[in-house]
Length: 255
Image (cartoon, rainbow, N blue to C red):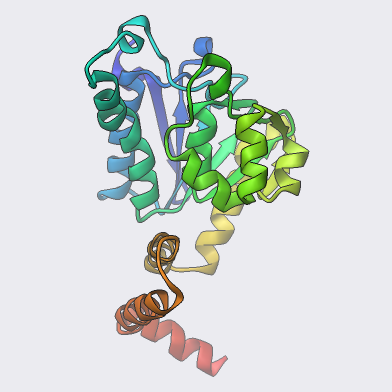
């Protein structure tokens, strides 16, 4: 398969759907897939009709994690760390920094780096058969793709320790109960459910406002309250002067 074959992308009604496409391996993240994923993100952000992104997996699972071939695992002298920084980590960085909201539509298992990939998205919805599994300990490794950062901010430190250190599989109902997943949909209705949530989000906010809110959350996660207040003032001052915002404010005031 070529790099392009590992990712499928469609755009409908302003929402791009990026599908990890290697169902034979439960969509494990191989280098070609990761390269194609980054290209798809770039295409969505530059001149396409996409205002939001859904990430999902082909077949019966979302993503089984990184495809650690023997050549990768056997890397020495810092080469494996370099591979992670150059191949794997850019996925998390690009999703987090994208101006477009990204929804993970988790169908079936999201394991290891696949779970980490879902966690770095802005919102998570899942099918009834979804499972979130931080299975790193089972193969003697630790978390990646930012899971140690995103997980405890999503569900709290103690629950994060529970999920990571015990390798517990979190089913769809518990994921929603813990606040990890926004909504659960029947297996055959997941994508339409994710698109409905994406459409509601776009209908209730402008694209610049959504992009600004992503930046605000990113800033606030590592900042003091005073610094965050200053940053919020800066962002608000920039947005309120745009023609789109002024028109909406005037309309809101009249209505």
